[in-house]
Amino acid sequence: MDKSIKEKVSRIKFVISDVDGVLTDGAIYKGDNGNEFKKFNVTDGSGVAIARAINLKIALISGRYSKSTEIRAKELRIEDVYNGTLDKNEPYLNLKQKYNLQDDQIAYIGDDIIDLPVMCQVGVPIAVNNAVGLVKDIALYVTNKDGGKGAFREAIDWILTTQGRYDEALQIVKEKIFVNSK
Image (tube, rainbow, N blue to C red; front, side, top):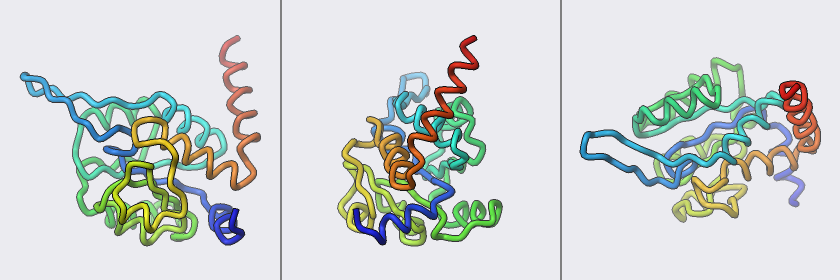
């Protein structure tokens, strides 16, 4: 791995992710009664748990409002959720201020042009495999998996592996599972 990429990833303390197209495959199912359904990947939820175990903070910024996004974020215990925010710069600046972070301490996972303004500011921009070309072009890492199919988890694994913290994170998760299963 390129030394400069490893140095950039080593500074990451916070991961912000888009929702539609990253945590989901981008499909939205609408029933005739107006109910909306989205498919989330359980593996990505495990990625959130692994990140939380190692104190890697997670936030979501979605350009489209969805009750499903709120429900999933609550299940995953993600506190910082901006839902229905087309201009992602404002929430990004709020998160930086709230957690006293610099751009180089933040990674962002995106898939479409709405993500570009934030991706151009963060230290580590990440694109999912099925992202549009412009997003892939500026990404330091492009996942092998598509959005909604474990790409978020792959990105978390890549960050922690690059930081040399993956084994530590897994050990913490295993201990919590073992303790909680007794």
